[in-house]
Amino acid sequence: MELIDTFFNWGILVRSFPILIRGLGNTILLGCAAIVFGTIAGLAICLVRLYAPKPLRRLATLYIDIFRALPILVVLILIYYALPFVGIRLSSFVSAALALSLVLAAFTAEVCRAGIQNIPKGQFEAAAALGLPFWVAMRKVVLPQAIRVVIPPLTSNCVSVFKDTALASVVAMPDLLKQATDAQALMANPTPLIGAAIIYLAFLWPLVRLVGYLEERGKARAAH
Image 1 (cartoon, rainbow, N blue to C red):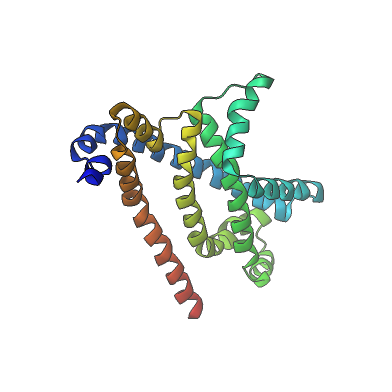
Image 2 (cartoon, rainbow, N blue to C red):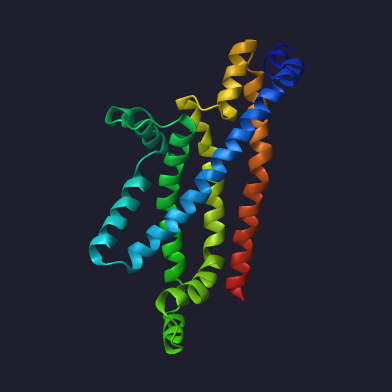
């Protein structure tokens, strides 16, 4: 009974639930912002790496290597605590969204590159034979085919982004984890952390299953 009262106290869970839901809303908003900006930036970096002049391709490669190697927490701390020394002050939400977007862009660029390079060269040659300009061929011929390949890994990256939003609590952004830790301190009981874990599970488990479904579907399509 002592274990239940300490970690699964129903009364405290009910009292902390509105606080946790507010944190969940911030977590979803942060994750969606990072996914939108990170995906757009990643696709742009991918195209620069593949088709831009050589100096720009090298810069894109350097960016991808650096942000794939750096932990998100390090990037977040540098943005939130170091930039003020050069006169740039960002809110905790903007700092977290920027850090997540920068890292996601690097991984997205590599995923998109693999997807584009998976398209047979004959597709490019056929588009050129039809007189399609390069960017028109890319938009209407290549990318629609590449999307089928990259959707499963991109979806997996999105799940990772939502999990990594928990790091925003380090810069006092009121996400789900920060709200849970505040509620724990307020109520002197760890039950709110258990509630946050349950909410994370309920929110992310369907996304994890979606990734599995997309991967299996992709394998089945490749087999045919």
